[in-house]
Image 1 (cartoon, rainbow, N blue to C red):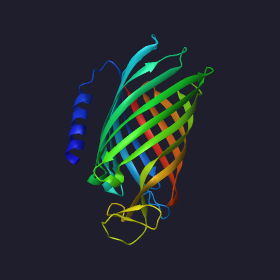
Image 2: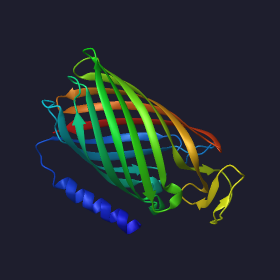
Image 3: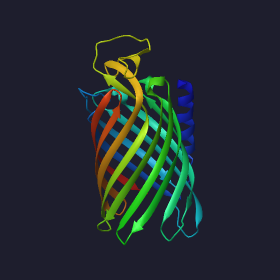
Image 4: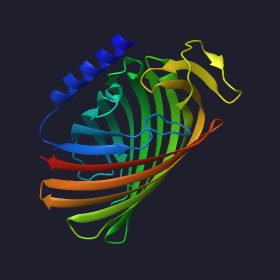
Length: 277
């Protein structure tokens, strides 16, 4: 499985770097914080990460009802405390877009994504699809809705998951250079979780009648469990253009994850700067 993930990553990078330049390219740097990287019910562990990305999107002018889209991205994130969580990835996403009315749009695209983690057990190839809708609300506001299906297949089954997510975004362009967005997402799927226990067993057993235990993780220094969870997330983003091609953004997301083991809470923040060319 690890060789397949690496081959997918290399192939994606080769396709990415061969993309034409007559489209929208963007590169950026970011600094983020995650308050619960170990996905635990109690004794959450936070970590800060720094990252960089490069992404490509085919321009769509909206002059026809139907068009085709293509997006690709390269990214890397380095965690400062838990280096096992550091990773690099590539994603490819071809699709189609339909304009049913004026500037309303419906974009449908499948995607494939490969990620290589320092903790090789978490390295994975993900397949899925996204439906994205967008409608203007007057002259300055807009509304977006989306659905995402993801099938993530990791080297270790505990980190594999399938997920269905529904969400919406409400945005306002206050000026040509300043905007805000607020969004909500609900998702359901299986996820790994941790419990603070002193155990070094590597035998898969049923733990406490509340989930399936999959052994001990040296990355998180705790036992790993896997179960179906419901996740609710609320996020807020502020974006501003500094120059015509240079912009910055600040975002915050609060989320809860609920399953048989209980409810965990997470606060995530991100500050980024990007350059379009």
